[in-house]
Length: 208
Length: 230
Image 1 (cartoon, rainbow over the protein chains, first blue to last red):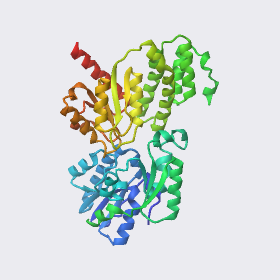
Image 2: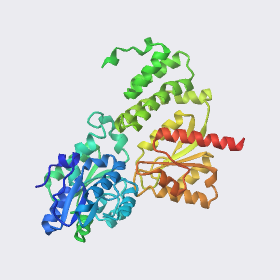
Image 3: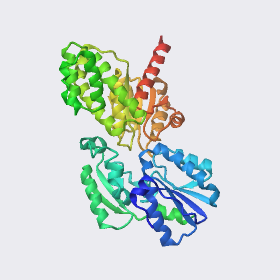
Image 4: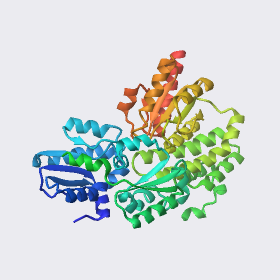
């Protein structure tokens, strides 16, 4: 069963205890990983997720992943970390190397969903990105933590240098498109939708 | 709100300054503007209003941000209030010849448009008596070099929020080395994904975790520079 977004944001997801390889992932990727696993019959992969809200405090991600690796290491043949750098400034990559576990390449999920090479080639630094998860959790991840629910006057301090909101759609869902368009309007940004699918996430997990 | 009952002009100086600290904490821009004007009308020197009312208040905000009591939105509201107070004081400070601690060129690196942290640092540096030349966002190395030379600055401050843009700081520092000008400037770096190790690795003088640390670090380096020249 796919867990609720709020649960993935606040608590994460417990492992099922089945499969040779454990994926330790960001809660924001749970649905996508479970979908890929089901579609491809990857029964050798188990999944546990850390709370997606860790992204609001990137300096806590490295330690949280380290603890999760220590907790689960003895129970699996291998562990794979489904985080990109995610604002850790290279510290997560360094820690994974020290721990002897692999992780997804790239700076952020919005880079690997589009494909790291394609994303880097765009040099699109005035775009603000949302994925399916972030569109559904826009208020929890963007609007409220930035205080825009209480102080809308802060909007341009945060977003004044951005030009557009790019919704990277993992699934073709008109309802999410409508919601993403509304998010762009609330932020005062132009809107663009790109159907990315799962990008490098799919090819990375297929290798395991 | 209980504070609605407080009439700022009826408070004595000490009470008013403490009230302004509270108002800054609560991000009350108009109250800060009013408080600044009252103190000036009472004959306070602009520099004293700046340091005792605004900077001291913002220092409390900075400490509570560092300790996880306040978060970014509250800090931004406080910064907006302080900025409004400073806008009144700035022309007066120039006229009254307030002490100048040093000069800083600051900017966000190429490919990066994030400027909240940089703006906070710039404002707190100004509050601490530094002259600040703000280059804005998305700065190529040439712009930094040209500004450092033109402004005869003491300090270069570079900011980045993205893992993908922070390595550009090394490009700037390496270019300064190639031009034989690296040792003429104090180089401070900051931004959410940075850390001390990164600062050392790229050859910066210091990584500054937040605006308060940046101000203190800049002051320490300036004191050392003055001592070495004495």
